[in-house]
Picture 1: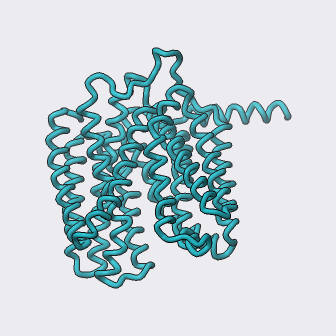
Picture 2 (picture 1 turned 135 degrees about the vertical axis):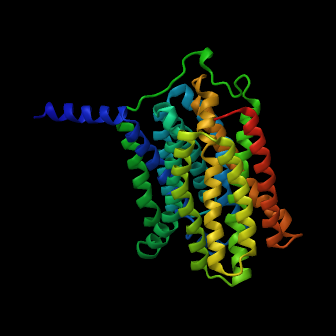
Picture 3 (picture 1 turned 120 degrees about the vertical axis):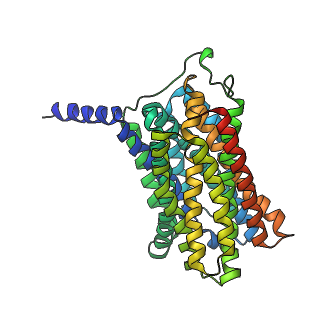
Length: 403
């Protein structure tokens, strides 16, 4: 009995490691945990200003450290995963996430918060780059779009559940437990990945170094980069400024604003796997990407012209679908660029970096323009940018003759 049980357990672990669907579940779980803990902080952050006697601007800087670390470390972590394998980076990233979350729970100074947020951003760079690369390694390329869409849907689920879980834990379990419970969950996920003998892609020797720019890839990579930055930049503008607009235009309550953002997240959750499946079966990158960006521009205009909250929410729902259609195809396209070089870690390190650039640039650009223009004008300018980018993407992806 004692020898049979370890044998059965080992056989189960090997079956999980050999199953692309099981690997997808692991990657989805890792991404969900990262985004859930990211969202967990949202209802708690307002407590920090009076708790530590600092201004809201300081809290804003701490919040932005996550994106900065994602920007700085995504490519290095992706390249490292090409060298040492995906599993060590995923396990290390989840354990770092657990450490950062626990550190939030025991923070007594602003320095502690900065350190925790820094470690959280580094962990996200590791888990996202290595996790998405692991999907590309183990998934049939003909189904990669759908799988990436499902993985991205975990972002939306985590975005919705994170603030809810954070608010409930804070209210009923107290400040420290708000972070210790998810810290234990994150560590548990890391240990599960450690226990599974996941196939690892590892490059040996100096000849195996990941090329950052494979020959002939500059134009395709630039086209994907523009799309990813446009999509993440749109989120970067909507996340901080749509609540302000809704409050100013409709006197919307926090609950109503939260519901509108839930609509955006639900649209992405539903649309991303579908967009990936369509791309896998029929291709049409120029239609999905170019058309998605054009539709996103139109939805942004509609959101500004809507006279009541329900119509605004409907426009935001269309926006979520359009952005999903635009961004999901770039993920298998990036995999195609780097696949022959065995450097999927570099591919998704690039993806994370481009996404972080847009996510950081959106709020900054909005802050510069907000001093000069009303919010509605800023959103209309964003719509024009999306429209122009959509047309250029339509032409560029047609010229590249990508599927």
